[in-house]
Image (cartoon, rainbow, N blue to C red; front, side):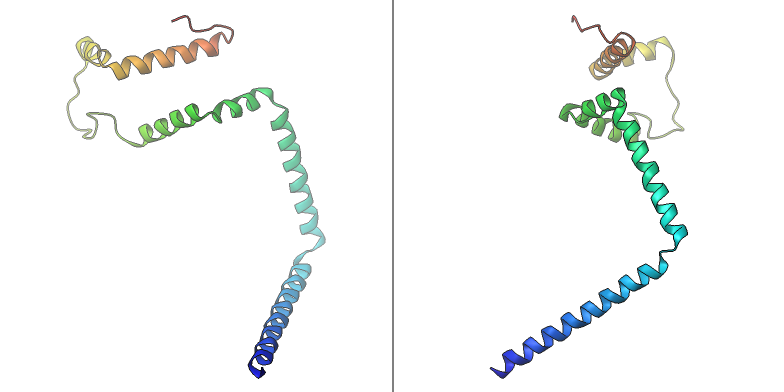
Length: 137
């Protein structure tokens, strides 16, 4: 029974120490809050609210945010990020001679992945240029 009373008194002592530390932290924060800091903080919060209001009123931005929230778009953005972070096929060695000209371009255009990317880019540019157009293919 004495051990229980001792553990209760230790817990109360720890709680009291925690309260003392908390009150000293609050006191320090109050001392640090000058009128100038409060004014600047209020101005920053006000500017942030104005900015958020402008952003949420922008229908184009909200439409973009909704489109970016689609799972397919998120996967595409992840693939784009990984593609930008890795060298393209055959470009690991920048000193290697490059094969150019029309024959190199034709070889590249035979790749199904390149063809798919060109079709996707063309479809995107078509929608950006004329948003009312739809894919008929």
